[in-house]
Image 1: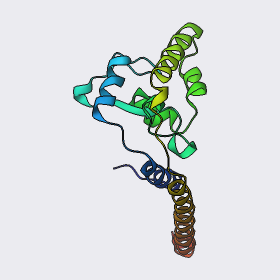
Image 2: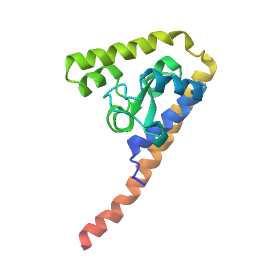
Image 3: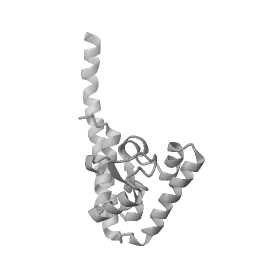
Image 4: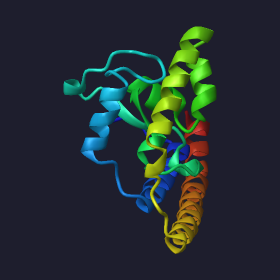
Length: 167
C-alpha cells in the first residue's frame, strides 16, 4: 500500500466530510455515464473496460472546491486522469492540458458540456444548516490533524538528529 502523505490525508478528510452533504451517485446513474461516454475517458479518450473496474465517476468540480454529487457534476474518467493527474484541478484547464490538439479538446469539451446540460436539473438540495456543520467540522478536523502532524514531526526531530550524528 502506498504511503499517504499529510496533504493527501487532508484532502481525504475534506472529501469524506463534504461527501456526506449529498447522496451518493446511484448505480443507474453510473450506467448512464458509461453509456453517454461510450466507455471512454471523458478527458483523454482511452477505452475503459467496466468488467475490470477501470472507470471512475469523476467530479468535474471537486467536493472540496464546492462541487456536489449531482449527476451533472460527474464524467467517466480513467484512473490516470482522475487519480494521478486531475485531482482537484478544474476540469477545463485539465482538459486543455490533456489534449493539446484543439480539435480533440473541442470535441471532448462539447461532449462534457452536453452531459452537464442533459443533467443540469438534477442538482441536489443542500440543507444550509448541515452544510455549515460540515464546514465547521472540516475546519476542526483539519486543525486537529495539522496539530498531530506537527507534534509527530517535532517529536521525531531529536531522534533523527541523534541518528544522523551517530551514523
